[in-house]
Length: 378
Image (cartoon, rainbow, N blue to C red):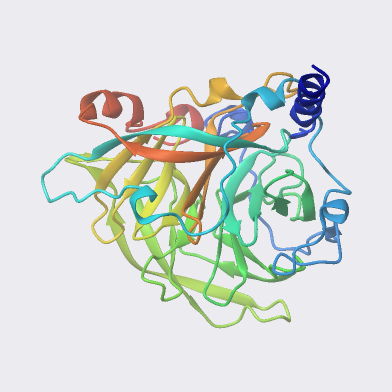
């Protein structure tokens, strides 16, 4: 009986200590209304949570010292205790990838939650990408306030480092470019920022041919090309030329080609946060609980991942209203997929599962409207 009592007490202690701890939707007025035109300027000093870099991971005691997420009631209830090492997945357990021929409908996918991690509920997530080991680069936007770029501890949700961009810049998607710099787009502006991935110091700016920056990721071809979206139905392939050095010089990016995102005959607008997952580009769709799996060479949507009840699984007790889903990150070595949303207090590791059929229902859920004039997109 004493042994049983000890086990129960120990389990309770572990349960309460598992985690501590996502914004109005991107379609909400707070994010798309009130244009925040970007202007070049000097970003504010970096807030450094530790002396370690992402590549030399700091100890838990130091990295969680500042900006740990506020404890959230019942967070432990959202945690699925199925520990999974961050090593390469077994061949038969890897994320399924479709083989879709021209004219065939996309494959529909569901998901299972592997585990939930804390996430800063005040983060208006605009861009997200994985940074080994067990960290994330995240950009957050704010109308009338500072946008941030941060290094986030995957397991604790603590912000290890953070820098703020000039006040009038609304940060959008981010990706690590061919030179190893963090590139960040800005909303309703051709201006972007380049940051050192270890210090988060702004090292330069760049200008694109886009008038409206949305999502950003890497071309799966691995040649340093970036892929961006701009509220249209296109994937824009960007090449960098000149400047951008440590002295803060400006860089120019040129659109070298463009492909239309299409599901059958339907053009898909409003692809927002992007992530490269093996040979595909995964795109959150504006105000939809869906991720489009896009063949970047053709623009064809080869799959839809439907997350229509994921938001309801957020832990209770958040002081901020959770917005729409926005944020996908992929750990290629461990074959791990992470998703979150604007002002969500959790970031979920999920397993993607192919379904049989259901494409008509998925399209009804996932297809965005052809226009959104209420947000300035006719």
